[in-house]
Length: 232
Picture 1 (cartoon, one colour):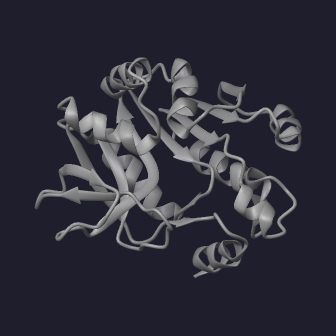
Picture 2 (cartoon, helix red, strand yellow):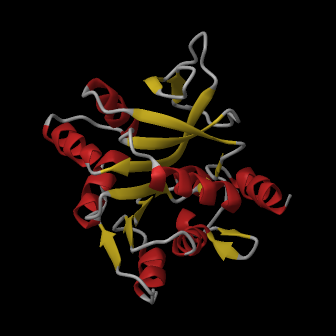
């Protein structure tokens, strides 16, 4: 399965809070965020690994250009207006029937991720399996509203009456989702959350896959929080 990492953000909040290295190179328990994801992907049947970083991240460029992987590796160096546009740039390398896309700062337990991937690989009816969590620690979470079968009904910026889950920043999708992505870009859609709304609007079937907890590294204090989470 193809894997892709969006690492093109500026990480401005970390910089403002005194973290000098670019977000993808922030270390948790001695390993950088981006290397941790790559190792996890290789351990979960990666047939290719594809990464996008922005043009200003010279340290990250040097770090990634020196990598030697056992599977095809594509590095895109391009600044984009949104994570959705970063996804679009990566999409040319997602040539298989199924792929998994993540943001670089998504922290999860590896055993949960492994089961998530196994579930997606055997999923026949849905067009995508979206990682969700009921652990809400984001300033602007995207709520994922589901029915009793965990089919995604809608995405919302604010909690609704039955809102329980938020997006975890991990997306397992089939090729049908790329057609929607192309149309979204052509129509001037922006932001990843609006693209996800487009998936529902165009009739794709998405299911939610609950993780016990997913942590995003957005602030300096999140680094220790993420390390503690992984060490439990």
